[in-house]
Length: 288
Image 1 (spheres, helix red, strand yellow):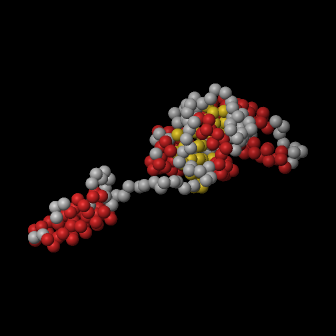
Image 2 (spheres, rainbow, N blue to C red; image 1 turned 45 degrees about the vertical axis):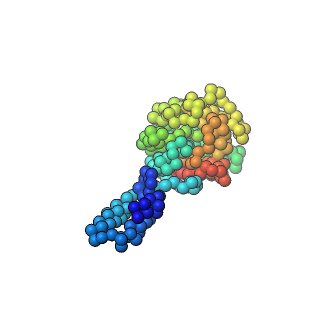
Image 3 (cartoon, one colour; image 1 turned 30 degrees about the vertical axis):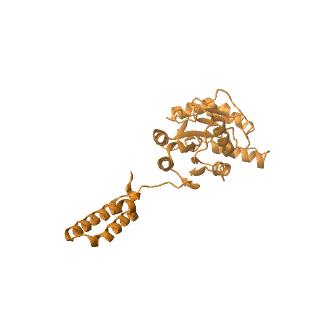
């Protein structure tokens, strides 16, 4: 009988994590079947040990396990802390190297102090030009006007702790980048306001960390874009296609999960569409 436990309870050998409740029950059943062959003191000992074993099993917390493939998620929040919390949780479940965080800039990280030149103003002018090109409210050269306002105006964080939430994800070792619809002409103004408000993506950038020294037309794109110090200026092109192009150009393997925060649903939809049917899940957060 001395060798019997080694045969029936072989699953316990070499274990580095707590055994499950089902395995505890298997141990109990095994020794209960052998109890009839013991004397009274032996029976008392086995019953005592069995009770202690089951109590310990019941108190052992189960470790969270990640599914083989994450599921897509579409959510809405007005607090970047929720995005940071979820990103760090996914990093713990799937490994930080398997998570990529993508953050929009305008109206997600930063906002204009006034309406003129803001993202809202730009899209109002854009839609007006399409629907009523003769409108007296239409401004000629909206790109030039917006660029001038970017140059002359300051921006503010969308929430007081916005930069802190970005740093939380970076300190957790996650890859965090900014992907903006801004064009390359607005590069200097963009970096000035990011830095002035405490944002830096240098430490969490996709390689090469400094980015590329020149503008380039991304694969699947039509206009020049620029990637520098973790900030990707896409010149208004499809953010899903641009994300795929950036991964390819930087030699980065597609992550298991993309966590994205953007104030525009269309941008989130484009990224979800680009990675549909792939091994990459997209957790899309619309920032309101």
